[in-house]
Image (tube, rainbow, N blue to C red):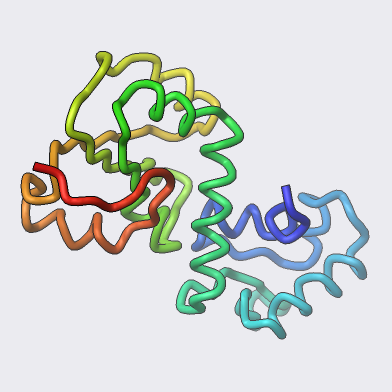
Length: 175
């Protein structure tokens, strides 16, 4: 994985977590001065927010920064690819459009967030199985929403899916 993914992974895993320099240094297994340098650098780039609390500096994810949101989406794409979930879904369905949506796509992730994936495919080739293997690897529940076409998606869910992050496949007009 890229260095930035490794450095910011706790902020991608839980976008509401706050770290002091010492906590981050302990988690990353680096010295506090190095942790301070890295965290301040990411704060200058506006990827992290720096606030004063508990008589020390606290660093948290800047969930309003578009670059942080895109990095978060790429982090989850990388993670889902690394564990083999995308390959599994591409094998499971015929020419699927796979979209990550919900809290993971919006950089609003908490420790208890599930992985919401919409799959738009004209034909389902095999039954859904083995998701529990990927849930164990991610330590998160995975929810699949399978639709034959965009028009079959309920209107209250459609905009959320359209604003999601395309993990695999291409938009096309399905019958």
